[in-house]
Image (tube, rainbow, N blue to C red; front, top):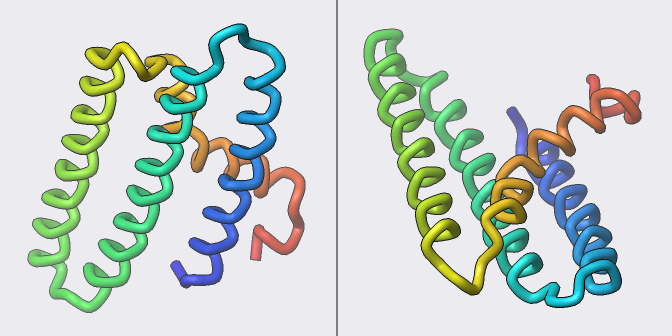
Length: 123
């Protein structure tokens, strides 16, 4: 995975996020918890994607046994981060839990949509 791809996905997540935040301002009566939850989830999602990028690049240079152990540890670390983010969103009154979940899924949505609509993304 190269840095250009990570930057392209992060940029598209930010653009789509600004669009969704703008819509939220006009649709919801109290948009602040929704926007904060969404931004929290989206930022963690982008950072987790960057962590995955770093993990892949580092694991490729290791021996198979070390790479397997390292990748498993990093995988569990990312799930721990997701658990903490979701626990904070569930317990905090100022964050919307569904909006946080949507933010966490935003990188996945952007990758899927880019694969469908962007011919250059497939290369």
